[in-house]
Length: 179
Image 1 (cartoon, rainbow, N blue to C red):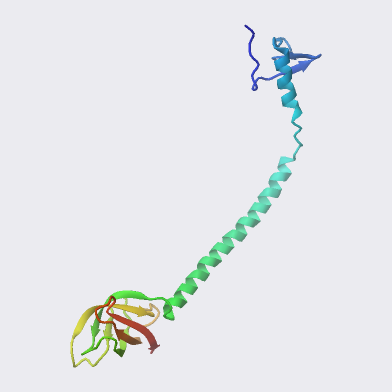
Image 2 (cartoon, rainbow, N blue to C red; image 1 turned 45 degrees about the horizontal axis):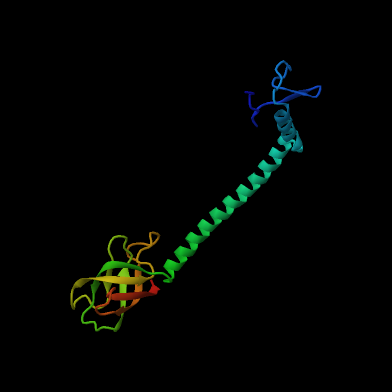
């Protein structure tokens, strides 16, 4: 039984004979199999590449690409945040919260001019005179800010609000003006 020649086997050629070792002391029994491996190993012409130069070119290109990608991502995040803040401030997007509402008799579908003070904790929406009625809790949808950390707590928002009846939210308010 002759030993097999495997693809991973190293093959050495000297004087037209295929050897198993570099010192040419151990001959391949299967010379045809060794020749096939030899031909396979040497038939694939691989161009010589200056890896150091190629590495520098790739790393410079990759560095520039990474810097550009980072700049675009940061710009998009900052731009997105600025757009979102502008949309919230101008009433293009809404937020809904449980609010204490003061409004004497308010019919479904009726609009009222209301005010609220700048508050980070709880919004009190005044839609009438304080001498008539009491505050009640309603879910209110606000199209505009109810709090701005850069403004004092005494800052007043003016709203145009509609009573929606039994719908959820019960009241919808759009920013009218702010003082």
